[in-house]
Length: 155
Image (cartoon, rainbow, N blue to C red; front, top):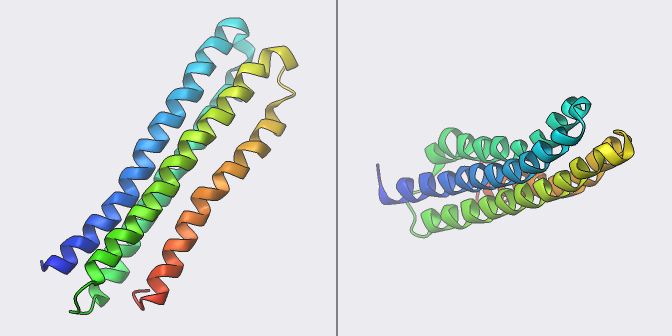
């Protein structure tokens, strides 16, 4: 494996690491609120599971980015200097998008979970809609990664 290929692989790994770490923190935040909510109203289990699982999607976006880099971009890497560093930069950008999106989505979900007993579950749809706004940043991280790889002719 060349240095350029190693840097490209590292860039993909950064994207996945950001998604994994952010999802873990977001789910932990929402899960903590879920435990408190379930102690108050055990009937909200389904709603808690739905909201607490939402920050998990950023891990999948990071994995998709890593797979694209390993299977599509890596074989196309030109033997030109700087491309590996560009791939690290792209992976870092994607990792940050997934990381912060998952953490803050977990915070939005935790707020919704905390209000489930008070609203008798009626807050679920509104909480999911608000969480989708934060999810969009993770989706955009994936889209911008694909765009950047396309511009570099690595897609």
